[in-house]
Image 1 (cartoon, rainbow, N blue to C red):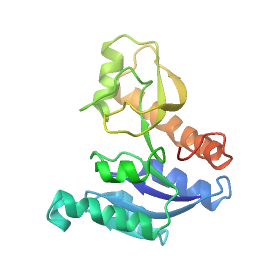
Image 2: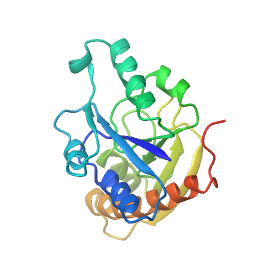
Image 3: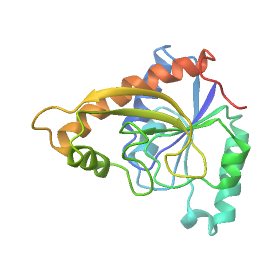
Image 4: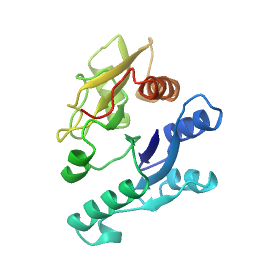
Length: 198
């Protein structure tokens, strides 16, 4: 299973995937890491592991059409089976979503459909969970379509909200679970328990 990861920032979930592949816990290969942010530490993580790292954005390509084509070219070159959005802060071009229909997955730090949608990312999600008085938050892995956080949910894991939690303490606990749950879900995809494609 050839995986291409999209990430915009630190890439700790990317590292969890890389480590699981290296240790033989997931039967897959991370073929490339793509970021819209040239300073993303995710790109450095990829380089350290000998994984091709690409900065692809309007700054590098000049137009949305050129960005879309470059992404398609890299994904085709890497014979991509699965696209993982791990903290990627851009909507993928429609052409990419159509070409890789049902093969693009995102990880979200809450239990969708609650606390999702445009602008709901990072600490904002955990602030919303606490403001709502939710007793439970968690991790959602879903297919990506043309609407933010609306694609089919394929797996969820609960994380309790503890008395006295701040958005930061909740975020840290959810992120820890993201790392393990992402690997568990990739194992299910590799085993065809969760289907790729139509």
